[in-house]
Image 1 (cartoon, rainbow, N blue to C red):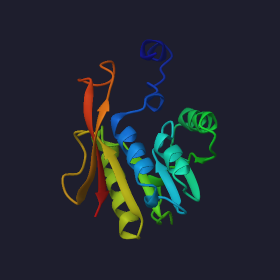
Image 2 (image 1 turned 180 degrees about the vertical axis):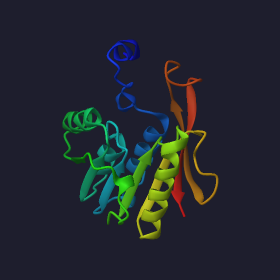
Image 3 (image 1 turned 30 degrees about the vertical axis):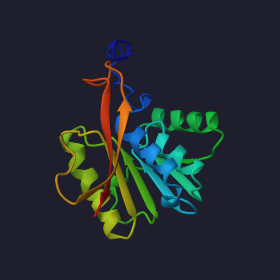
Image 4 (image 1 turned 45 degrees about the horizontal axis):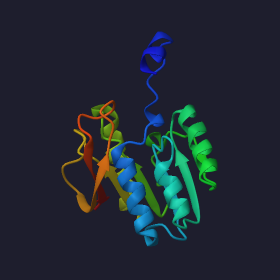
Length: 178
């Protein structure tokens, strides 16, 4: 896929994979439905919306999958349909806004893999947490995960592909922004 995309100058479809942080976050949401039940949930940088779909299955009142990649949002809608759930999608770049989103819960899976966006993502998630949202991050130990202000709340052994990761299993850790 990457070779073909390189030939057309398109970026790799990172949204096409279920990364370990997102998988851990989805599993945690399904195992602990009280986190999202009856609440307004944002699946931030959703990709294929695995966490948002899990939140819908766990009883969230409303789920919006947000991603700046239109292909990811199309994949999110298809994935939701395949799982017999409905989610909203939004292409709005939330990092450009200064206002809190008003969501009760924000799920962010596997998003701290590059330095530049990680700075803006961290600021956004901390602002949302300070505004009263429960902010959960799923991460397998990416380099740019913030070192401070997070509390580990769960850990899952997540099978991975050697085509995507450097090992066959990763710790998918769920963190709460404090």
